[in-house]
Amino acid sequence: MTPIQKTAAQLSFVAVLMVSLSFASVPFYNWFCKVTGFAGTTSVASQGSEVILDRTMKIRFDASLERGMPWEFKPMQNTMDVRIGETGLAFYEAYNPTDHAVAGQASYNVTPDTAGGYFTKIACFCFTMQVLQPGERVQMPVTFFVDPEIVKDIEGKYVHEITLSYTFHEAELPVEEQAALAPTAPKIVN
Image 1: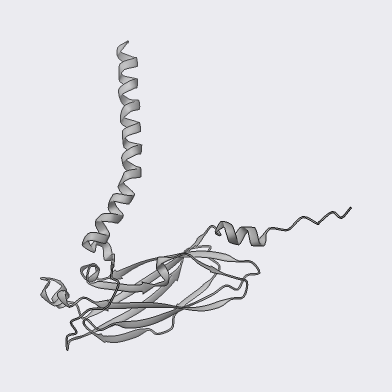
Image 2: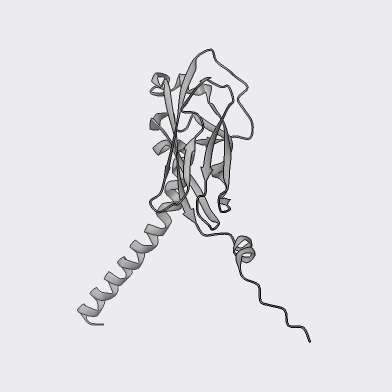
């Protein structure tokens, strides 16, 4: 193998390695954020907290749409005061003004980032894809609590306000929705 061929082979190997690592980095980053609350990623629980403190936390609600997403999307309340550890219930509203079904998936985060690991969702519309039919308007709940451990955190104990933000992204319609929308062939009768 000539030096040029050897160098080309090494560069090809490095390129393949870099591409492979870039694909692996997304799942690893998502896992890291879920475990640590980094970048405002919230926690998930199957039930509420057993401890409820007297201290309250102001929760702000924010909604946005990815460019090109045709829905209207907004929180039903702008703010809510909940005691730390108390289960809260908030609603967002989505409306599909188009003449066709549109699927959407919500991404979410909380700010400040310090609160991410302590803002815990019990149930959320963001856990599954949402499909709105033409002209359909829905109210979507999110059930949550702020983990009482936030008051013991070196930075978290200074947090008095958390903003929960959702962004809806258009998604491909599920196969069963596509099948329901497909035109049917006329039946031939003999």
